[in-house]
Length: 325
Image (cartoon, rainbow, N blue to C red; front, side, top):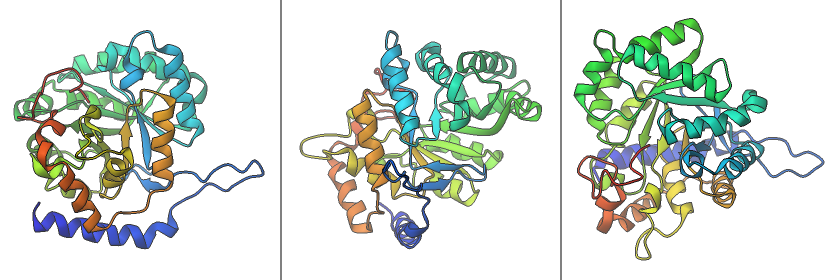
């Protein structure tokens, strides 16, 4: 871990601790509702996003899980989750379909994000039309370029007839409010894209194993912060591969580590309502970790960092089921 990354974390923890009293909490009514999760700005979008957000994978992307998925989505919103992320590729539309069933009656309660994995203008516009149909909405709060992996993909996206033309057209027409980019494979092409275009948000891989191998938090995260982007963290539990008896053993350590970085929110796909409720409880009671505690948690992953970073270029086991974001 470089001294520069240590310094940026230390400064952020000081800011987080000083500003903790200013975090927004919902008033407690006569029904004694628990305090809501802290809020942070989602970059320059104007949206105040809760610390924990719902990802559209896990149960939500699996066929035959409609009832369980709708229960998770509705419970998330009931608990104050106000950002939901999905993608056209998740379950080949299954995730968007389940989320759309809830959006039919609760659209105004969440900031809704989805993605295009097509690198062309026409292909992306077709995906957008289908996404709007499945999500049962006439607009997206955020439309993102999905899983950017290589410089060659960047050239396609920004070339003649590339996907960036679809994003700009959709924003100009009002079908999409904000534009984002996502990736977990390699920070380098994401840095290229963020330097080339003023995206509103970035969804990037961040977890306690990140500093040990091809880190996203050393250069990409500070760049996104300097540009005023909303930063959404993903891959926090690494599909469960972060947890080991001789390493990290709790979701509290994993989430608290990421929440202590300069991010807007973290998305996690949940298998059950119980997992969802645990994650919300961790976010609700979150206090920024000290630099020493951050280093301790990072150190727990040192012996198996490659496995916990399986989704990165050169990570152990990339390409096996579960590597999508």
